[in-house]
Image (cartoon, rainbow, N blue to C red; front, top):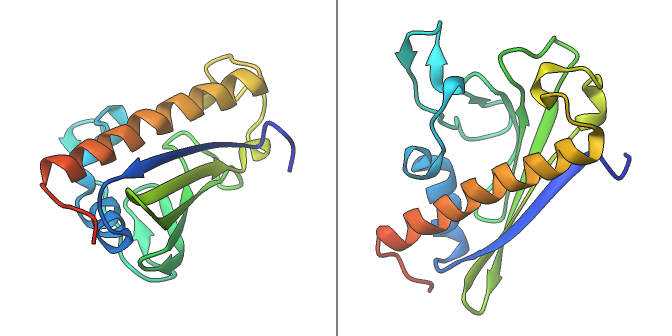
Amino acid sequence: MSATDSARVTILVAVSPAEAFEIFTSDVDAWWRRGPAFRVNGSRKSTLRFEGGPGGMTFVYGKVLAWDPPGHLRFEFRGRNFAPRELTWVDVRFEPDAGGTRVTLENGGFDALPADHPVRHGADAAGFVADMGRWWLQLALALRAAATKAGRRPR
């Protein structure tokens, strides 16, 4: 793995690890950013969802690789324009913290994507990793907002 193979973000969410895991996996619609990836055949809106357990599927994006509630989730993450060998992964950790739960999300496997891959939007490796870090941070902050809006509190 190289220094530009993954992006990592960490946030604090004011809910228990079990609730954070549940919101992340079951209330995805409340925090996931909508966009072109949510178009099926270019016409219908679809919903990202997790089928729990190893071997479960994330709709469109790949397989669930690890399902260990409430502390850990790992899944494949691939775009519509990925060739079969082009595969990234997302690892999410939910760790107890005095303020609730520390959620650490790492998206990696970028070395498997060619430098001219469309998902990179022309960015060099370091720029692409920085862009992915900002994108995941936006999603993580939306996860925090969804937990706050739901009125959940740490246990």
